[in-house]
Image (cartoon, rainbow, N blue to C red):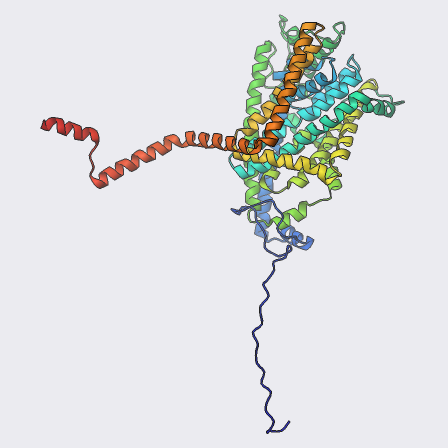
Length: 584
């Protein structure tokens, strides 16, 4: 190139900058404690990020984590103690009624509803199942026992639904917690709706489990006790111990009045001049035969705080009611303490990290739920501990469902272990039927996404209803666990009364019930039912909040009016009238 040649001029042409696209795995995320917190997945974390956030801390941070974990474990222990105390107190308060209910060898619908009511009264599907298992060899048919354990499967979900109400103070938390609790309810109810008619028609559970127990022999032995019970039970038994034999013996009498161990009602355990104990010393050995609703501890031999050797039935039931109240107070306090501490420990934690850590394969989640339930010996405890975590947003609804399903199977394994140490194969057959019922239900509802979404969508709608109207969970529990079973039990009793008048009345009630259900379904589907329900609940919640804040609002308005009068110099109407009268 020579000097005469023109130099090449480079012109910078404007380059259009591409808009930056935030990919799903970007660092942006929602954090616990954010005002716009949501359980929707925002981005995807790596396991390296999870490890860094979980395990890489300074010495001061480790001390804070250790202190927070200690506090959470403290509240968790007493939360479990409260659940144990709640179940024991419920057995004392409702034990006499539950024994009469469970001892009725009735039709399939009646047996199902009896299982629901019995579990709600006893607050323990394990206790209900053990009573049913015990009755299976004492006159209760295995087929009726199968229908009852189906009902027990539904009744056990009331406990974690009650626990979800402990987060009423925060609408968003209540929505997530109630949805997490009701996946259990919906799964159990829908499973019964599908499998109950199949069992009535084919008796597949009966024949399947009959083959499973063929050739198996069991012997009476000590009851198997899980490690968590060994930690919690000693403290609860210092307070109160329920006499479960009364429940079983009343039920045995209802089935067979000639049964030597059967008793007609609870009153037969009261009224003796020497009281409940035979001997000067009050201990298990002296008081085991004459104990009322409250008994002594078999292992330690000591009698609990609320045991009274000269108590009446009313006094024992009152003591049970007091313990029931104490248990609810302990549950609420421990729930608030656990939730508050967990919130502080996870404040600012990215949901990307949390959901990566908790996003287990569904089968692993089910195995985890099964294993934990076998350890604690209660699906109610497992789901009740998980429900607050669901409310905090730590566990998503999609993860809560398989954990709950695993817990459902886990509680039946406990029943099998209990049946293995009892006489006869009938008890084991009922326990196996409980397990196979849950396995069949899981195979129907979980593998297929469209079936699984029915449960998840329904639970989300129920959670939304709870957030709109805070008293919705109360009405839900009353209707689903008391009113519905009560209506069906009443109808089944009418048909079993062996009188044409009662059968005719039952037929009329059933017809009206079907018509009412049809009309409600039509109204819900074609008359804007969901919108009207939401509007109604919103109005009720607004009215409730307005009534609650009305005294404060009135005091504030009066103060403001007084301040304005002082500022503007306006006189009260009464003062002006008085001055005009004086001038006249």
